Image (cartoon, rainbow, N blue to C red; front, side):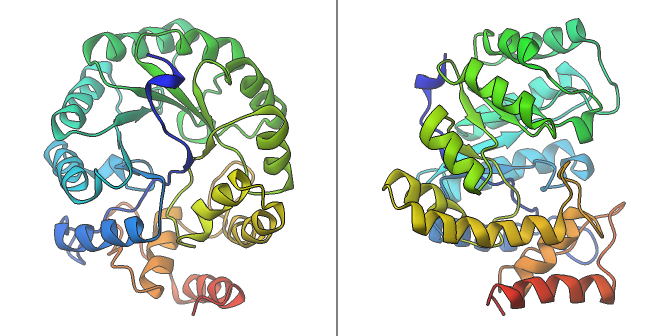
Length: 305
């Protein structure tokens, strides 16, 4: 497999997982949220990623989310399954559940908290790639894993048999661009910002899009990339500027949230937009009144209330 084995492109957000106030998985709300994402013309979604609170999901719950997503919108967009885990054996079980559900691929970070060495990272991904024949996106997220996959390591991982894409969420912009140049002809490369810098990268160097979070702006997110594909740079700039408001108001340069848990922020924002994103599950906590006010102020600034 390589980049030509898949058609992944554009805006593919990691989406929230709806829970009830008591912490139960809310599959009815999940179906409504999935339909909204499809109606907003997402190029794809990531199920049970960090935004989807994978860390608090039971194994059977993750499999249920995969199956429901495939059945609800799998014929309308790319659906990837988040398979983050502490061991390759566990990641393989999640990957097999994604494959059985009919998902188009999986997303996988190195084991979080463990801070594995380079050879351990390669072995981890090799174990998964050799066990399950499903397209795999390597996810570099130093904030969550404690390791930053440099270009040499990403190049080694890109040579594994099922790796078709990289989501590079490094705060090292120079490293991001170096990786883009090295890998653009071999795998799909995500992490392009919705800014003038992103426009320059996509039009002059390459890249395939952005695997973002939450899709709070709805169609504005994917339409940034559609505008670029159509050559309408002015429209792309206008849409990208709206996304920059969210990023600057809610997130830091390392993609961590500024004032609360990212999942709680995104769920509250989506709820204000009429999307049944539900509640966060502990250990995460709901927003305080002051934090809710900050979210409402941003949406009001964007004309979304």
